[in-house]
Length: 342
Image 1 (spheres, rainbow, N blue to C red):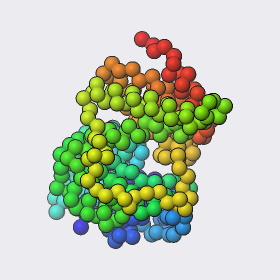
Image 2: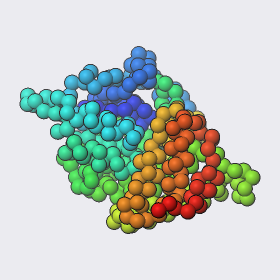
Image 3: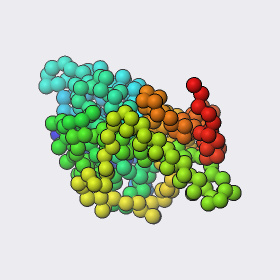
């Protein structure tokens, strides 16, 4: 039986650990700081449908506490900006593989990050990388607690060998995750699905910014217009880079009818992963979302003024640990209108 070593105890990682616990699937949740200490001592406070319960997940506060073995699968559940440090920490750790000394880089590793960079980072050291995209309503605001906003299935995972292809572990992983309450679709071209997810994620940072209610159309119209420009730039750089994008509606083979948002969950819409990072005062993933579009644009000669402006505004706010709502949508619009420097 596969044991899942979940690296990162944030919203996605802790929720996965809770779901695996309740499905009776072997795992270890590896985190750090007060959050994992609280989970270890008091159990994870897991809130679903607005109702809290305590889930006793298996935990470790240091990689040295985990004796890796050949049947393990590593799940990288950190934010993408923390992926390099996590992969470097785990790749060369010793593993007993059927009595033979090995290293963790021989084990399969599943990535669950937004953006495209986590797979690249992992593939530098791990030969068997399973790329994954996840759709879920997972919120981590308070130490020792995660909240789910899901009404049925806990989330939707699309998983395949990275950058493309299959892996012998995929069928077993899919079966375990379905048993744990997730909808799982397997693909042999996961990078296309990650690109499709990035078209959504480039707009995440707009949730952090305050709007201008005095404008005609108000905050929603201003935010929507910027979002459309961010996505248009992303599509342009993907085309220039020769990066295909999955049609997630036409290519979806799994039934998503059980996946929805519970209005009684207490989870507030419009507070995705980037907003949560700013709310907790920790570094955001903007450099790997909007920054990915800016990077591809610079590599392939495609202007990306709106993504660059949003990256800058969020970067400045991040550096000063400003809370959500401190910087504004108008700042992005004005920066994007400035002439490009050559």
